[in-house]
Length: 194
Image 1: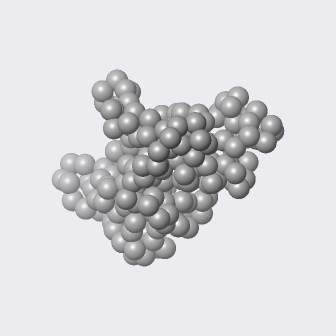
Image 2 (image 1 turned 45 degrees about the vertical axis):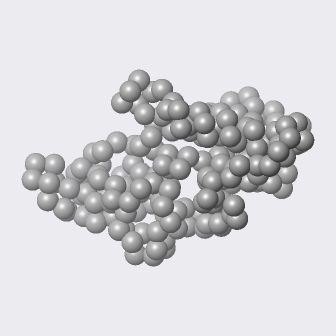
Image 3 (image 1 turned 180 degrees about the horizontal axis):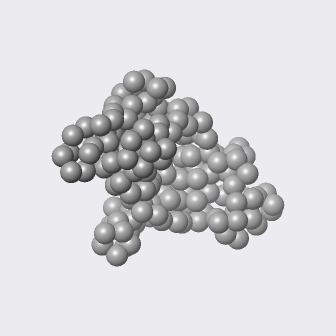
């Protein structure tokens, strides 16, 4: 298990966990109780994720990375809710492996997503304002954000999903230019029982 954090504007509001796509890693990741498990093929070849992901798959060890978003406005520190989520997930894994006694503690809603995604683009430059909470399941055609003229705050573009899915992320910053992706929708979503 590896932990990582990034700014809250980029990640899902419900946080997510990256898992190798092999069966043992996927099963362990799902049993961790993390709200969103993102299956990422060939994660071991991604240099930016460091030595854990380069070594673990080669040795046949199940592995995953717990992602937690931090709030860059307050110095990049993890909030208590993030630390609690990581602790609960670590305890769940230890219970599954028989290291700790007791039952696993799972949230009400849990999802598994893969690399299939939709990235609606900004047709205009402006202020990007998300309109539904990150981590929300959205129907096909749902409006998830708007782009506004900064001076007048007039709506100049609605950002909607063509396919629907899990509203997973938003552009890393409040201002977008034409051609930037404005939202990240994971289109292949499986709901896990709690």
